[in-house]
Image 1 (tube, rainbow, N blue to C red):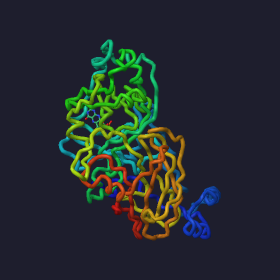
Image 2: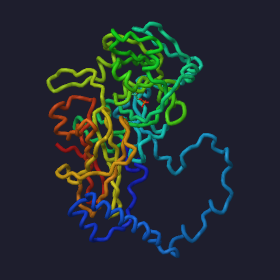
Image 3: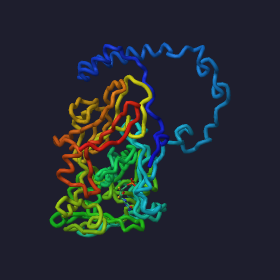
Image 4: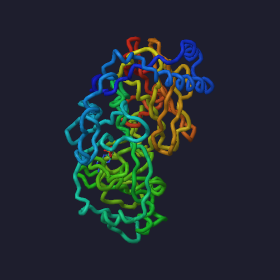
Length: 445
Ligand code: MTE
């Protein structure tokens, strides 16, 4: 599991730029929209104030001495033909959890959510979940077959797919097993491991509906699709026709370039809002059928064990969920004062309607600021103004989606689902900030 050093940018010490009166008021009353305007004004004023250096220039060699990079020639233009992050960001990487690594090939790497901004995951940091390793496919030899209940079975080359009309849309991809370890009494230390089987990209591809129309789908009998991957894991999943015809894509693009090999190059299925296992990578076949196939990955895995011993199958939608990504487990607050608490919210059923934050373990909730654009089945970034004076704090976020569904507490979720499950844990996450500023994962209820 991760150490504190894994967390990369630890929470920076904030500037003490709010007046004592305002800090007291925020602590007493919280921040409603009126105070938000006030605090924005205060921050704007403080930003102007920060322009007056807090460290006297004479004491700071980084201000008075010109650094070597200002006094020398830069690197040549083509030194780095495919851009790479700064070497100072080398710690911000996908990580494996020893507890979840069965073999090097059947494993997961987690996205470092604690270090990311905005709503898009850089392609190189997109989490990976492979059942039998990833493959490097020669796109000239890759084919997509469409068969089953269609008038004319079709086989497409990549070149043919790339010539078809395409759409680009931003969506999250979350593994159904994300946050799975939290069902038990295991409080996984960092948000990378609790929630990092979650990423979001702009995907580009051909709507599945268009391909099925070309093949002449039998509308009377068709109910489901079987998606099959070209890797050695025999990854096959039943997809509801409703989802497939609504917004599913046969995608080749991710964040403006071709998919990365780990994420399915040259072709993957994108089924917005649906759990990750249905997003079949290295996609080679879509078969139209009239009933679910009950393949191994939908009969033996990705089923929900219920408290009464029964199994729930085909629960594929990722329900509304949110998490505070900073401050989060493994980080440390270095100074008292103002912090912008930030995190992500999402729903497989639509858009994020509102996000609320609690600093007292769920007794009181206040609205967070939601950053646009707020897109369906995509990640939405939120922020919350918070002043920390060293008191022990239980930080939580809660999302309500466009259907009116509110993210459940851990106790509410366990009340319905018990603790024997692995999949579809969308409970409210709690981070405890200690008086020493250290942040830990705690399970309430
Ligand atoms: N498709 C194939 N062919 N093989 C796989 O192992 N893993 C599935 C799905 N599609 C998988 C696959 C699972 S369980 C998940 S969560 C997502 O891919 C993960 O996608 P990613 O690796 O791009 O994050």
